[in-house]
Length: 113
Image 1 (cartoon, helix red, strand yellow):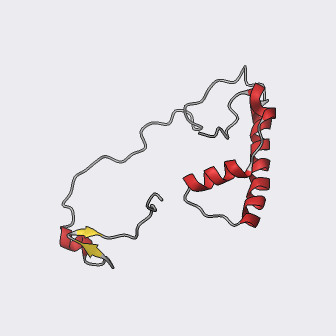
Image 2 (tube, rainbow, N blue to C red):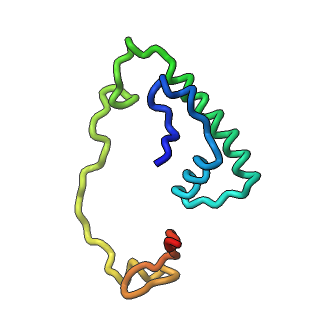
């Protein structure tokens, strides 16, 4: 696996974003990029990673870790009240494509070649 995230300060200056790393990321994200897009994305992602390097160099010794940005936040979920759900026929009646009582969607993942 290619390590693109700079987790340790001592390794930060030794890493750079390469086309191979971008190819790996785009493959994981199922995104096909043209060569000119790759060049553009490398520049953009390098700027983002540079910002994270700056953040990584901040002295946070006296900063308490936060669980959530809003203090004293309690359960914000509504009470779970069961009610009658739709029948299969009702749920599927407006669907463009169905098969055997299920929604049918286009394939997202490609076959491994």
